[in-house]
Image (cartoon, rainbow, N blue to C red):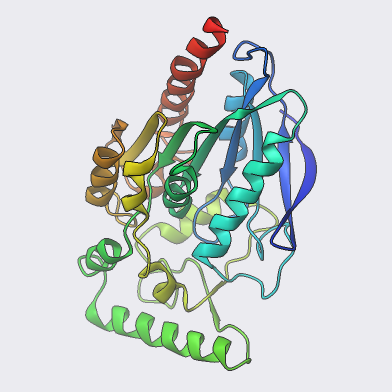
Length: 306
């Protein structure tokens, strides 16, 4: 399914997005069709494994706006490859505003979809809002402290100390005007990188698109430890689906379960690791089917009533 490229403004920065038009009006009301706002996880770009998800939603009768965060992929913004959790949340909210203005879309039926790091963003973006009709959080990173504790079971003390040291060095460099210190997003075990678990490099490269760069600001380790987006789940007023990889080595599944409980969520469990819900993996099609079925059940009722 083809998409139209468009841009929107987020706090003065131009972000790039793809708009997938709904295949039909089966989920439409007199006010218009629902629209899904989507973005990637840590260091990801819209051309890296997300199009199959977006195409499935569009085929099911939803418009889709799939965007890149500031400083990543096709979006503007300097410095490049720097993760700001507050900045990415602002980009999500700006994308929601842009999606609500798409032709034929109902601005009161926005759906938020996020994977990995973005699985936490969507909880915060949806909290306390009445224009969000549904939320899907996929293998979510929802607790920085829990992730740090989780990492102690999968990384050696030496690796953790080196990562912390790089993060501090990067933070000092950025704050003294020398720019960010970059490191690989994914690397092999024992190498320098934000994600160095066995298989992570190969899994990420298998979905990497042409705009993706295997670089990220080293202070991301400090940035991630400062947030606990799962606490926002209790303030979500709409149906929530949380899709959890039970053997997730990157995003602690226990924290995802707590977020789901707080958000009174529908939960789907998959006996796999973090990247196994992406295209090319055994659990991709079941995860997509469950997400589509969830949205059809929750949104079709509104269309029928209308």
